[in-house]
Length: 370
Image (cartoon, rainbow, N blue to C red; front, side, top):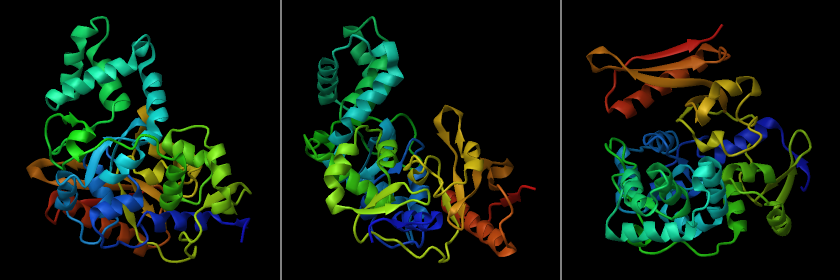
């Protein structure tokens, strides 16, 4: 009923269900990306690990194939960061994020963007891409002769990462691709331009489907957009209104999953910058505030985490050792309640490492803090 209060665990289970983290599903990669809406991809391997944790029988070739076949793309999207998402979602919703992309660019560039005619600069960059795909470095150098008082890095970032709709050409985003990615226009790579004037309400609905229930501030934090209160006010008659444990209004789609809060939850490993850790302003539904500084690091870094009973229970990492071995180490914040839980963490870590290295038998360490 309207106004129903959800506990923290209920919010956690809703998020896990919508993010395919309660049980792996066997669905095609483009369908999974639409369900998840997008996967962070600043680190090229991160979306592969994110999909491995969510899809039954997932292989690296499945995502690589979707990127190569142009069913998925790697492009600047949410919060002006690189994401992997379904190609049709990029075309349908990229223009919704234009204000956030421009705002992020101006904040990052500061005085380096002052006085530039952005429309003219974008037209110059588009003309250069019509000649051939270009890397960030190549674009900056090509634009510099017409703007000798600027720096090449700023010119390339302004155009290819924020102002001009572009996508990375495959093998950009591939698991083991070397070198710098090249950029092309969506007209060249996907056969058409992004939709000109999409309804921001659709962006709200997609967030609620993938990460809800949520507040207005949650959607603004996730998207980088501001001023969404009016959009929620317009959508309110079609939304379900709930409440957080603190009494804050939460919005949701009618019929969206709200699983039982006491059901079993498997151990899951998430990569750097996973959107589960970035989709809400209030992140207590997945992370105890006492561990926030362990996960969100200086410079905007977000560490890879392990979920135990649905909540962030520790961080993990891999490193190369002698004789070509790769070791995965899990640093648990506090001892899980049972040896069975610790064994589950170790077992899932071993499976993840086998996926990452394409072979079994690499060492796994699970360390529990005192």
